[in-house]
Image 1: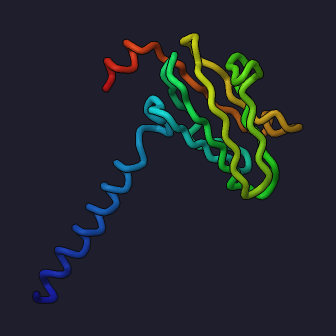
Image 2 (image 1 turned 90 degrees about the horizontal axis):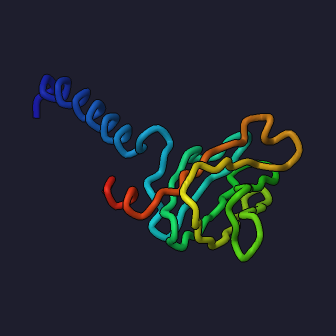
Length: 138
C-alpha cells in the first residue's frame, strides 16, 4: 500500500472505530430489561447505568460493583427481596448481589443511602415493566 492510501484509509479506520464504540455504549445509560442479571457500577457520586429496567414477575439478580474508593450502597425503596427492602452494600472494590422479583410495574428511585451520597448525586431510577410491555419492545 502506498503512503497516500494510508493517509485516506487511516482516518477512515479511526472514525469507524469511534462510531462503533459510540454505538456499543447503548442509549443514554439505560439498560434493556434484565433477563436474569443486572450489573450496576457504583463510584463517586454516580451509578452506571443510572436508569435501568426489569421485567415484572421475573426473578432478577442485581449485582452492585463498587468501583469507587469508598463504601457505597444501592437501595430501592418499594422493592423487596426476601421480605426486606432491596439494599446492597459494598466496600471499595467489592461486589454484592441480591435476587428479587419485582411484582408491581412502575418507576422506583434508586439511591446510595450513606450520609451525603444521595445529595452528591448518587441516584438512579429503575423501571419495572409489565410482561407485555417488555416483550413488545424486543
